[in-house]
Length: 493
Ligand code: UN1
Image (cartoon, rainbow, N blue to C red; front, side):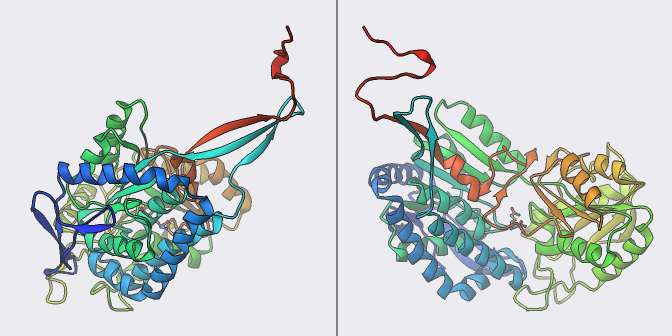
């Protein structure tokens, strides 16, 4: 694919002429596409086109804006399989997950289209019977959306769809690792007929320029805490810019003493190893009650050994490669660190270099048992790979304490048959997404998606992004011929 930026309804080269490549992480010899490395000129062009398009776009009725999404989703649904295969090739997740990523993106488009004929504000009583007050929503202007490679289809759509349907215009800056998928999003938006400048895509190397640009009103970001923290600092320097950041997790699945162990093992496998552990919602901590520890551990390790790692386009492959060389190095560093910190290694993971795997970034699961230690780095820091600790606990109090012993707070799951214990987890653990008898992954688009502590800014994305990309305004109308004021302010001279 010869990728381009998508600005003002046209596919264009970058101003500098510099490019980068997107490669298949399962076979690094395979170049999937070449893309422009965007520079200041490209950012200037994209932001000014999005700014110009904003006025016309916001003036359309919300229902008219929604109709573009109807066209968009029909095109996406027709090519669902082709897009899924591209997602899988580019980011390495198994094809079942490639399809799920595309399905989740499609759900987001369907969701926003479904909202346009639904109530969108509130009518609020006034103290004065002749006054009607309305809560109305206004768009904000140009939105910059900076997205990661692990959900190259769904996450851009989580951010683009609510922004655009509300009347904002958007510039998407996708990860360089998954530029082909972002290019596809631009192609389908183009075919769906969105007016020029409403949706723009800028590849590579320009995220900070978009954040710093005085005309981007909102910055939406999903990625690492380091980058998110830098974005927050830059945005704080502007009086009229805000950001909503989703920034990873160190999630845990808690297995209590009364747990159904079939559910527990299955949920743990899904939580730890889907997407090779590279979801913000992946669990890298399994907090297990000592009464069920040996049985759980035995079954979890046996099942993990059966995981098929290989070409993610094969239907029965569970784990594809991780995303790139530096991911393999980071995971290996954390595996070593776990050993130094006193882990009892149950499965020693590492890079697979045999004939079948030598061309890709394949890592096998690293599973260990480790006593709770509030100072341990491996039990507190995000690894983003198939690296998982089993932490024994004596009861629910300790489980909660261990759960909260990290700076992150995104996703939490408990396996129990006891609704009272589940309620304690619900109330005392720190998280944004909580699950009972389920894995820590698999949120749906019509729920708020976001975390607490280092995981987020408290402004969840997907459906609830509407609160970030709109101003809630009060609009009050007087139906009387005289002015009657609230708070006893009525004056007649
Ligand atoms: C992410 O990893 O950043 O809940 C997103 C889930 C998916 C989204 C994950 N629906 O696991």
